[in-house]
Amino acid sequence: MITFAQPPGSGWNVVYADEFNGNSLNENRWFIRTNGVFTRDQVVVNNGTLKLKNTYTNNGIIKGGWITSKQKFAGPGNIKYGFYEARVRIQWNPNGSVWPTWWIWGNRVNGETTTEIDVMEYSGFSQKFFNNRATSSHHYRGKRNINGVSSTTTSANNVLNRNPFEWHRWGILWTPNELSFYYDGVKYMSSAQPGDAAAENNPLGLIFSTSPHTINADPEQPDNPTAANAARPGQNFPALEVDWVRIFTGGNVGGGNPGGGNNTIVALRKGNATNFGIDGNVGGANGQNVYLWSASNGNVNQQWVEINRGNGYYSYQKNNTNFCLDGGNGGSNGQNVYLWTCSNNNQNQHWRKVNVGNGKFRLEKRNASGFSIDGGNGGANGQNLYLWSSSNGNQNQHWQFSTISSARSQFIGPLKENADLKVALYPNPNNGIFTIDFNKNIKNATAIITDMSGRVVHSADIENTTQKSIDLQGLPKGIYLLDLQGEDIKIQHKLVIE
Image (tube, rainbow, N blue to C red; front, side, top):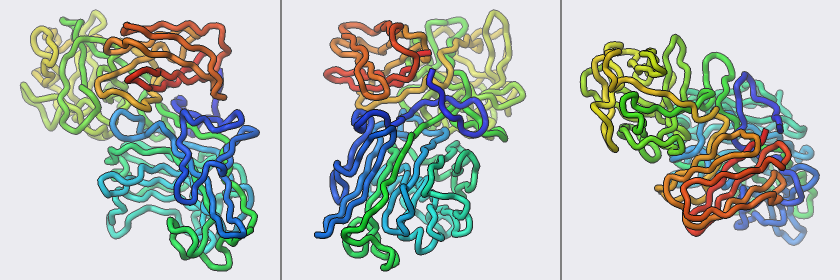
């Protein structure tokens, strides 16, 4: 099994990784920007690293490299919280003449810029204002002013102990209550406005970019670096070099701050109507209704990350969203249960698991202990969930838990997906034998498995079925990428063979 250097703390599982092996960028995973000053020939992969080059020719042509991940983070259905980390360096000290950055951003949505997280940023401003060291910043949504500022940025003194010209790991911990920056696994800054980052609901991409920092030559750049240090035609520049980038979830850095969930993903079926499970509907939004629906462990809307809140209480976070089961303020018979933005300290989302026997549990609201989640009489698609007076004898409050997987089998796609198409891959990790479940019939598609170098190692047709089993027991242990491709489907999953 491939293992990775772990973030601080324990319990982390890698859910996204690119080691930049092989001799070219895997363009199934990355967009290469080719407008403005950014060109394809400035993006190179060899000897196990990505190299984004900088060029300023004697006749005034400026070129840089920029790649953005096709997998998105935050936004509906995407992984958001966890530990993001990359091992990077600027090949030598350019004294402010280039602008290399490892960052997370989503461009502009409806005219407003998204959250921007600059994990490691160096430019002419670094030389001018920050002792020639790289900075880190959290720019708030829309660059809005909060308490008089539009970002949290490292100070000129804070940057001194971090060297961007040598190999080091630069990362962030992102949770509903924290956005903190890490260097070689040690925290050095936290955003003053983690709630603004938590409120980001637009998809963001991982970005590595660089270009020469000039004066009055590149229209995309602010033109006020120190003139003596600005890029000059014919100058030799270092590249931004990236060894790897990895995203982890399911762990804890210590102090009770979970990074993206707990270790178990569960499905909850009604104890006296086991053909029906708790369903959070498609995506997630504050106030979104939660109801019963025909039970299927492969239905991602019925998958819940179980988060231990201590003292026997748990929260249930809808898988691959930042929304939890919430019982609202207080408690009364018939009070609705819905989705709401997950918060560690919101006791409306804390549920005590009361064992009622026969492998079933009652979910009792923490701050209204006389009320539990009730599914009503019988079971039917769309039947509402609500609070009702707690009673161990009320079988409408009995829930049967089944473990789907550990949180490390998180969803890696989609690249393109129908709004009503959902896919589950299990078990994952596996021994080479696994099953793909679809929530509707797939008429004609192909499953393509590639190794981390991009080499196709297996393919299989999927025709007129809702389930496909695949046997890869002849392959070496490691991480693979599963591409599902068809007329109206193009989805990627990470696949781990142990």
